[in-house]
Amino acid sequence: MAKIIAISEHFQHFVAELRESFWGDLQARTQQAAQRFFDALSERQRDLYMVSRRYVRSAERHDYRNGYYPRDFVTKFGTLRLHVARTRKRGFLPEVVAKFQRRAEDVTLLIREAFLRGISTRQVGRVVATLTGEVVSPQTVSKLTRDLDDAVRQFHQARLSDDYAYLFLDGVSLRGRRPAGRKRVHMLVAYGVRRDGTRHLLAFMRSQGESQSDWEGLLGDLYRRGREGQQLALIVTDGCPGLAAAIPTVYPRVRHQRCWVHKMRNILEKVRKRDYDQVKAGAQAIYLAPSRAHAEAAFRRFRTRWLRDYGPMVRRLGRDLPELLSVFAFPRHLWKKLRTTNVIERCFVEVRRRTRPMVCFVNVQSVDRIIYSIFQRFNLEWKTRTLNLFTQAA
Image 1 (tube, rainbow, N blue to C red):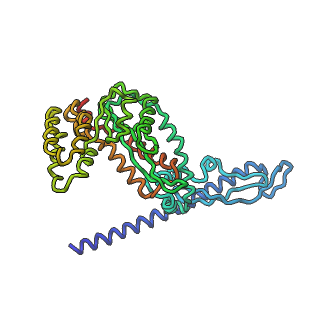
Image 2 (spheres, rainbow, N blue to C red):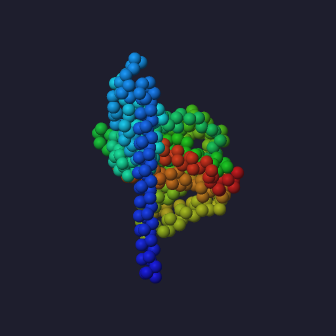
Image 3 (spheres, rainbow, N blue to C red):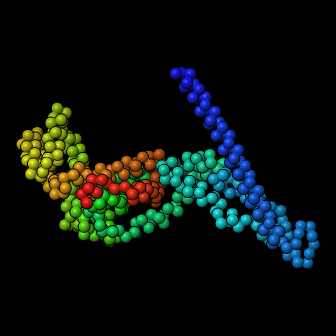
């Protein structure tokens, strides 16, 4: 068995070396051919401009050949060092090359995509160097990603359809760099689901925190852009007091469901270790009940058992109970999806994964660019993928 593995490894090394030799030689030949082609094209353009042939005197001569100047162009085949023909009055950069920027568009896209994938600006330069031979500076990477600002602006201003039935709201906190030092940047996010299971990350907004006024700013923006809530049946939130207070000011007639995952975390965080399992089972019996009446009965049993030991916690649960049981007004097979903000939390997992290598953002504009890129990717993926449970309900 060991002998077979040794042969396999030897073969893999052989294949790897063969591939590297073949593609390396092919890339070099392609690069040389491209350089010769563009050099000859530049020379021909100069000859056509000069009218007269080289070393031939003519009354029609209006300019003189003046050698060549080097010009580097970064392409997916590597860096091409072109010899651009020139005269005393002008240069003759081939027209087909002049249409491209100094750095080819596909390389620019590679730089931008690498950055948006969570690679730091310094590491992006090294990645590009392995392909093109040119090390791109962190400043260049930052400059290229600024092109996303127009796309971010259009995302924030785009009109929204008013056919979403479920709205999930939550916030995520990221590290930013300010003149006074590093500081957390809060991002408020809205995620919508239609009755047929199609979904969309609708909006995000930077804020100082998660106060009522901060959330009213996001909800008001959704309303102004067309999300008036005519078909909105339920808003699911993480239980933030500021958000709970903001919802009635913009969508007063829409049911509100608080997330049970966040609530369970609040319930259990101060419970003594010896009571932990019993308290957890008693609280779970509330949201796992087969109906709202059974859930209310489960809460009464929970209150009777734990009011003396954990009075403040039980009373808070009683105050929040109506918003924790809103989900029972909807089809049963949707309860699991609608009683938590897990669908939006999964998006935040990707946000944190992508932004972790960046340590912190240099400015708030860079926060907008990376969040926009991540959300836009999700929205494109979801065009052909629906949430099956909601599809069944439709």
